[in-house]
Length: 184
Image 1: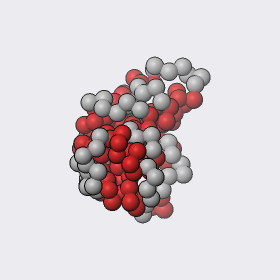
Image 2: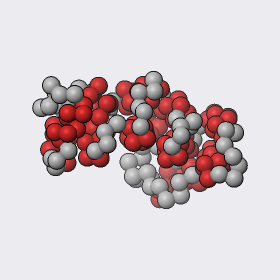
Image 3: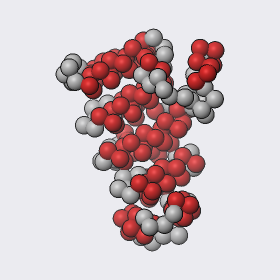
Image 4: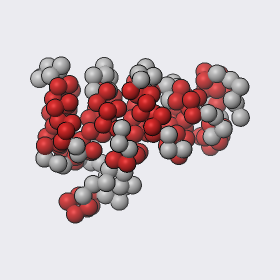
């Protein structure tokens, strides 16, 4: 247990350890510490913190962190989105968290947020996506991602947004008749 340390000390202490050792140590940490560790520059520590939060089903805490602007780095936001993605449609505050990050400066954060909105298949998100889309130049790649997300929502086919995705855990509760081979 490394609880008496602050997050940067935890990161420094755990960085040289194996994934299994990092995971075991982080299982002893408080949720609040794990949320801070999502911002870690060390991949092993930050990713293990995200996985522990998933196993603890702390998606509500993560969404709250997104909506409160507690994640400041691209990697922190991406790990928070990873937690949301793992719960898919099973978490009702996800749309607000995804929408909150549509204005992010990082293309990868926006892309991950659009992925979530596309796979939620909630047509009420279309105006939100269109409004965020208007902030971008039509000739830029980011605009094209917004356009693709709108198409996916309008056509009720999230695989328009991410054609190679396979929902192995059925997190997105997709129509098994329509998308059968891409689920499970």
